[in-house]
Length: 143
Image 1 (cartoon, helix red, strand yellow):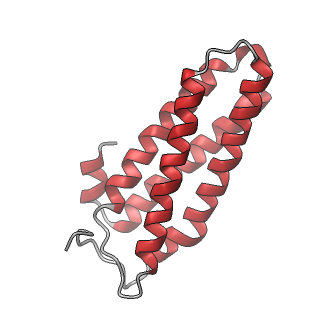
Image 2 (image 1 turned 60 degrees about the vertical axis):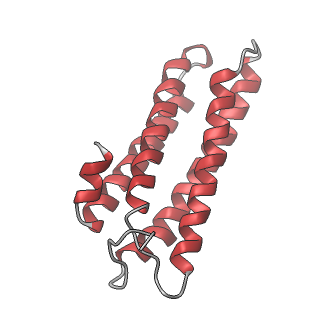
């Protein structure tokens, strides 16, 4: 779904779409773990692509959300964006890896999965409820 489609919807619709992305990616993590080690590369490629798309959607949405007077929303958004950058660095490292050490790559990917799970949990428990509260609105952060 394009960023413009997310931005034009309601907060609730957008958050529902982002949560669906979380579920899809987490399901692929389980699939990855159930696969034989020598057949995991296609799942890794799919997961990395979905994560990048998800980050773009989410960042497009977050750019439309005005901060609340207490500043807490701004801090949460800043933290989410920092985590996106950290996860993108991990994705680039996985994509650029030229090692034949499948075990090391699996361990690194599993570390990234753990980081993604924690990131999604924070969004689901803290950020999304904050954005769905009555005081959140859809003005630009720059206003």
